[in-house]
Image (tube, rainbow, N blue to C red; front, side, top):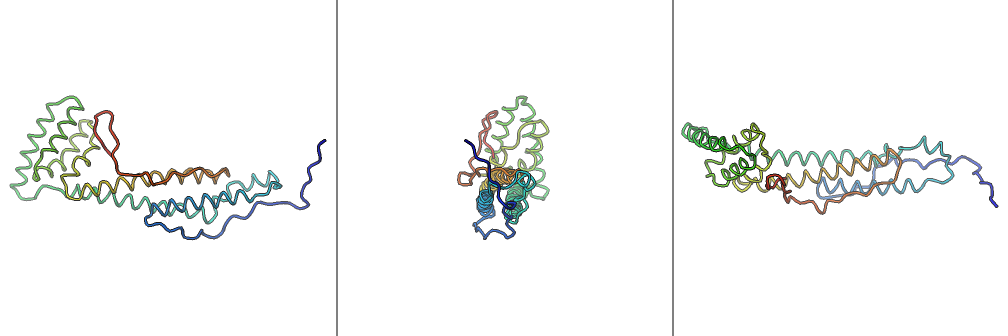
Length: 240
């Protein structure tokens, strides 16, 4: 035997969206702060969804779908992610500035010596046709270059490789041990870029869930992020 469904005597509505920011979640870096905030917002969103009565009319639920996406906690997410991107951009700029600052001296003798060295280096590279051999030779140039020759390669080698459609994204790693401070700056830029990529993915998935009024997704953490290079399976080289 079935019993008729008893409807509530008065309409039931969804719980109001939060109108106050979440309590400061802390974090020693922008990335740590953003991840903590994402986790706190996801938890708050889940509690808000769980507070919905089963007696809410389906039409009311549909009309209210995505409401949490404009709540104060949800609106805290974008500025936190922007701070992570700003820090990642600053780390990359510092790394790039170290490379750009490593230039040939402006005196005539140094400039002439640099021109002669690059002419010899370019001729040796021009004689090679296969991309892996060009990369190998370019790596050898950097590995064997003197302190006065490294600025020449830092200035000219990347544009040369690109003009021949040869991968040059390995150069930062190759130059890292040759330019003071570049190794540390390179590692810092890689970590911050990877942290931002993870947090941007979390942000996209979480905000998409809130807009569609579905369960909060699992969030990726930052504990496993390192500057360890990935392997280039084509050339055998490593890169960021």
